[in-house]
Amino acid sequence: MSLVVCANQEQDGSTIRNDQSIYSAFSFRNTLSSTYKIPKNAQVALQSCKVNVDGRVVFSKNNNRFYQYLGTKLDRDGVTSPQLSDTTSAPVITTMLGPTDAPGEVEELSVNDFANKLQERMRGTTYHPNFKEKTEVEVLRNASSLDFLGYKTSFDANGSTANVSAIPADDTFENFFNSAYDSTSMFDYTGGVFTRSGSAADGTAGAKLPCVAICPSKPLSLSGGSFTVNISGATGRANGSGVPWIVGLSRYCNTTTPSGYYAPPYAQDRHQKFQSTQPNKNTAFCDFMITRGKDSKLRVAHATMNDQGEITMTGIKYQNASSDFTDILNLAGKNYTDVRFTIQNEIVKAEIYDGGKGLWATILEYDPTATDVLNFKPVNQSCWCMHPVLGVFSSSAGRACSLEITEFDAPPLTKYNPKIREGGGWFETLNLQGVSHKECAELEDRLIIRGGQGAVSSYTYKALNASSFAPEYDPVLILDPSNVYRGTPGANGRQLLGYNNAIVDTPVSASASLKIFESDFAPTLTSSMAMFVRLNNFGQKCVNSLTGNNSKILAHLPRFDNTQTTGRLYFEPQNFVWLDLDNPAEMNINEFDISFCYVNEQYATVLTGQSIVCLYFREKPM
Image 1 (cartoon, helix red, strand yellow):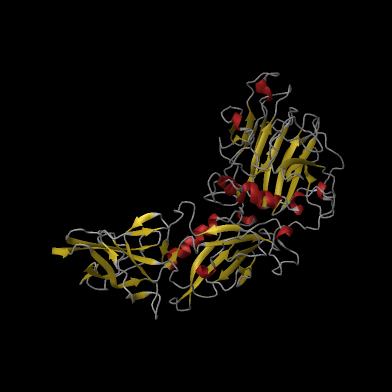
Image 2 (cartoon, rainbow, N blue to C red):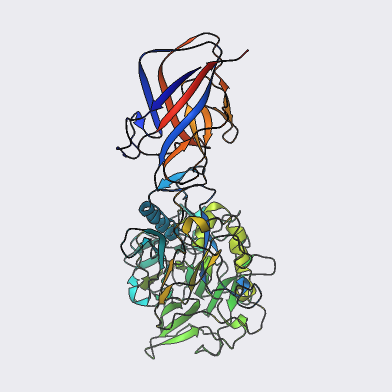
């Protein structure tokens, strides 16, 4: 029997992390000055191992998942209102491994880098447009700024004073009717003016093609944001020409129905006609819509779930107490020049400008005393991010008619993109993942959202906070699976983030829209990830069943000893596990290649400083 001592460096003084040379602590080679002979039919075993585990956060799919909830805080008894069905929100999953990370990857970060990563991941899975890009995560330390205490997480929102003018730039609208028309030049959008192509003659197929488009560049602010469209001026002449038109707000649909229509996967797969009226022969999907029909009458509609679990466009009679109208408005020969949507959190207000009187008239706004068939649905999590939709139809009065956007208020977002995962709203992200038909449909099927029962709802729509600044919502962290905040399977981030409770819903401080949470304890800077030592240039047989491949793993190392979990750790097995090298003849060795890994065979780069591995070699006993 013989002993071989391998080490990456002479002493522990050097702690350069992630050194990519042959001397790094997690992967190194020792080259011999003379040949070392190993007898035939030899065996190898680990005699002892010494490593340095630095104080970094190590996580993988086994401890990186939690959920965020943004909405009305629930009663934890699971019975008393409000419960989840009494709200317009749902928990959303946040994983420390993002869309661009390898699914089986293990990450090792300093506490500062982990805080930055946590902030990035929480921002990515914050889907409300006024809360996006506002979450901040810092390392929490004591008064001397030395001792690590956990993390400080600050939730904030862009309020009404932060709204910015975001009239869409030229050529940013795209077809939003049927994918069959994606390559058809049906419209032009320049300088805020949306113009239908007038090339097709009356009576031809081209004249009848629906011309409906959406601009996905920015979402409307839900902190008092307004979307105003001129319908009758010199550059907005659709209404003055008597042409049917649509002004709407809609979530962005990355996919189409089987028949090619731009709508959620759970929409009725055909052109939708309003249930109570028919303003146009064919209309488009919008969450909220103001439209002029062929009969010149003004109507409003929204997208709600029917009894078959399908979302469909539904017309609304705008004669509740909030409306300035007692009957359907006929626009023929009238001096109405503009229409406008304004949103205060969940409350949508639709207005029209009376040029003769020089004032805005309310078409429809939430009336808590009205039956649900006389109210817009509340803005809910599936349609938090809404974009401008414009449509101009054709008639004998004119084909090349236009609408002009004169106002569109957006929150000051810098990375918004509903066409990528976590770049836009909740619906858009799940739509890209192919699962929106389940979670979003379940949300929109809640009675308080779909309505249509002809009764006064017990639900009171949420507006802005007391200062009329930002949406009246509370952030909640769900760190273990919860029966109250349902739909949180696999949550396992409580220890990683340093909290005692599975539900964290009470901030340590709150003012206006800013709510701050702090860890209850300092998370342990060690991982439950098992670590292994490998002997890479020998023929020992080992199979890693997790990866399904052969491996060079020699032994399993614990991540702790009896006294500590980080720093210098020493491991010496009580019982040697001898592995056959399967060498029928004597071997001449001039190099030892050692590395440390996790069970997925990824390097354990959490190691630093000096690593020592002592190996026993012997001829196999007969």
